[in-house]
Image: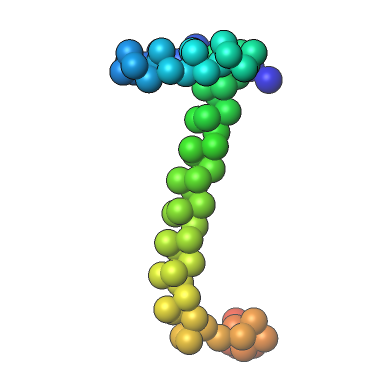
Length: 75
């Protein structure tokens, strides 16, 4: 896996807490930050998926069966 550097400005108190947390638990700082970002991305993507599902569920009554759709395409 390729790695790169991500430079962002973060509140000093947050950085201090993260570094202390990692130090006390023997976790590498970069690993912790990478996993935290991945988890947040997953959570945000899930929220978007759930919103799409909610919107599409309202359109479900307008849906046609696959067989009906394919029959119309053959005509």
